[in-house]
Image 1 (cartoon, rainbow, N blue to C red):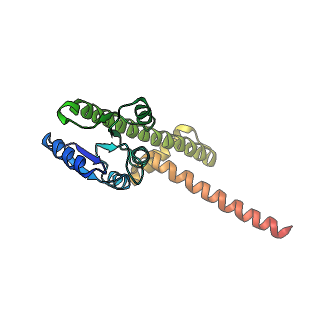
Image 2 (cartoon, one colour):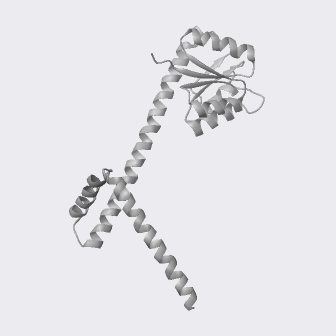
Image 3 (cartoon, rainbow, N blue to C red):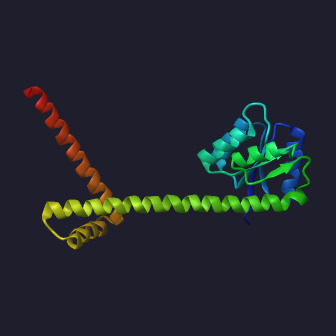
Length: 207
């Protein structure tokens, strides 16, 4: 059975251990970090479903740690704080937090906030994955168009014939057409760069 994984980061050992114990009672898999740097290290390595991060910690702040986790590991956070003033809420929002919890924590009461944040974090990860796949597809599509143009110029053929050449090579090598196109474009770029450098060196000597 799947168990959602939470990284709990708080430099107060009593609060951290107590909250971790309570979260485990709700069947969460809980990792623990005693400071911001440790949270970033564990988060980047294990990529939990959500990080619950104390806002103030002695080495790097929760805001800085949350920023590093979001940028490096695409891991989302909610913040813990002893305060609930407007300044804290604003800083949490600026850090991209999906929510915040005010100490002391009653897990039963804040469970909807945690579950909502985890669902939002999963949606963000899915969007980023979709964006990455789309960018890859667009890049391969661009390279395929360039490769077709190269083949058309080289062999004086139509675009349909050029694409069929790529597709045939794709089947022969058991690779996607986009990959074959990318290899062709890269090879042509390398030849152009090599001959260009050779021409420059020859020109320099002659002059």
